[in-house]
Image (cartoon, rainbow over all chains, first blue to last red; front, side):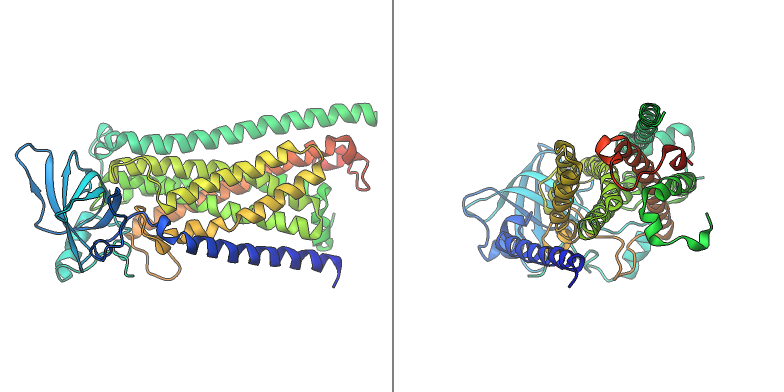
Length: 154
Length: 57
Length: 254
């Protein structure tokens, strides 16, 4: 092997080792890299107890209710398998809608209601004109998943 | 044309601030990068030619 | 100079690289302006409103090309750095040095336009999700490469050390790219990928791709400009002038 080939194989080996190390580290910290938990994970008790965490999923259609104060809202977060009721007092982002994705930060109350201190809208990766969206909505059977990143299958 | 008027275009459906700051900063960064590189190039050429005067002249 | 005798080893020498870069710059810059103008026209006047985000989605036309370039340029920088380490070739190190600032600028722009897009759509300027955090790490990696190079006086050691740093940091690029698939993030998934049909209306996609090509051509132009600066600056350094290859200034100023 010439010195040049030696140097290149050394660089290559170094990169492979680095890649493996990175994969192991990321795998070890898997749970910390997750931005939110799904309702299924909440139901299975995989969430930090007594601590603030984030929950993400679809805002189930027809569940959004506003209280008379105009600020407090109730809705149900769903990942099509499990459902978690959420209470939030505050202003919702523009894109927060029923049937769309959302991420809420807060704590689980003893009764199983998620009390949120912050609600973020999670939009999907589809971009199209409103007319196309309407046509698609008509064509598609109701309740079908429009995004593949909103709900993570374990 | 999808925009009725200039003000409608600038308003961007209420998101004008976010849209125009994004595009504006990007344009500024690009213009700044090109101008600063031109200056750097001219400076390097000046130093180069002055050194040529000392070393080879 | 007859073109038929041009070989790679000839281009690796700096006296050929300097005028070649000079000739390429106006073409790249001109094409970049044309592509960006076409992309902006299509993006603002032809592409329709988005069904869920309204006009705010138009930030995608700078955000995605900037983010793509931030990752692409890092890989390019690491490639030239690795080539420089393997071949002990000075021009490769110079390429890596020329790429870093442009990559850092695009990373900054991707983060900034992302914040300006996140606020009206998600409801937050910034969240610590895997995609945003790994892109922020990319900015620090670029800055690290540049600072390391600037802080070492001996040019050969500066080249080698920053090249090694750049190579180590390259693991972050696949993490950025796949973060939206590996972990659940607030950031949405990829609209355009190799494996699936684009999840965008055709005119939106065309506008975004035109902007991306424009950004790529712009990067070529400014990187070549910076390469010429780096060649000249290093040529002026005394220790460099003592080396075997010494292009006279009259020859290289084509």
